[in-house]
Image: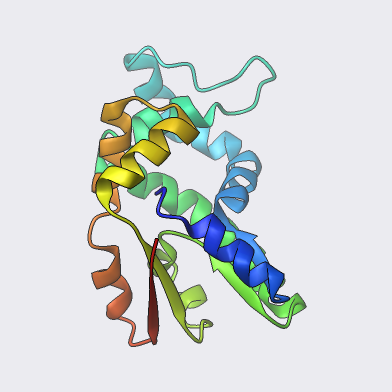
Length: 171
């Protein structure tokens, strides 16, 4: 989160690569899976006095995030719902384009997609810089940012498990 992945992807785009922001696909997958998500998390949301729906009837991702990032098992439940949808979307995009860069923090959680990658471009930045970028960009509370950082600990270690060449960018 807030390491500079978007900037790095924009540089690849200038060289003719098709860049895919997985966060956008997550939003689409949430919309497509909204009823399953509501069925799964509505009781928890109700208990925490959180309204999962916006006025337009769509899922409020910020409010959903308050639930998901409060406990690893809840985030895992959400991932089991949306990752299969995202995987199908990305497979289609990859097959439609010659050179694709995936802007995805936790791609290691979808091994079938990661196996399609020739190299991993791992963008890292120091925690304090990331914290203030996230605070400015997302307007999240300090606690929310730290929870999200916690869920993304040891990412490089996770990617090394796959044996795919890793190019590290310090941003």
